[in-house]
Length: 174
Image (cartoon, rainbow, N blue to C red; front, side, top):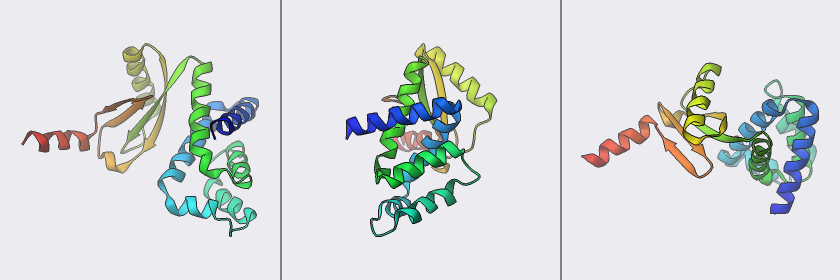
């Protein structure tokens, strides 16, 4: 599976680089992959062999229409048609690593209860650069379970500054 996901990640990279919208498309792919991971219903609908491929592609189009670029829609639709949608999260992770490697950046997955403004993302990226010594690309996932604050993951390192985490620490201290 590793070779196949590498192959698709490289193909995705070539397509989005040619489009000239690498950051935008990879952000959209990342978000869709995380929705796919968190939704059993969506994953089952897109992988059910009893559902015709055209119908599964229509589900993707309905979900992404007016919310994503044509490149994102085409890439996800292609993966659905090839029967590889379960591999999308791994493909996207490799794509992010590939683009970060080329630009000497690292990717920080940030979970927040609310969407961050561009200014907040830039300030966070600057702070993470100071602590890691590398340029950091911030990808934000809105996750209401965070309650407040941020949960940041860079590679294997997790920085949990969420209200939920602080409350758990307080409970443990009592």
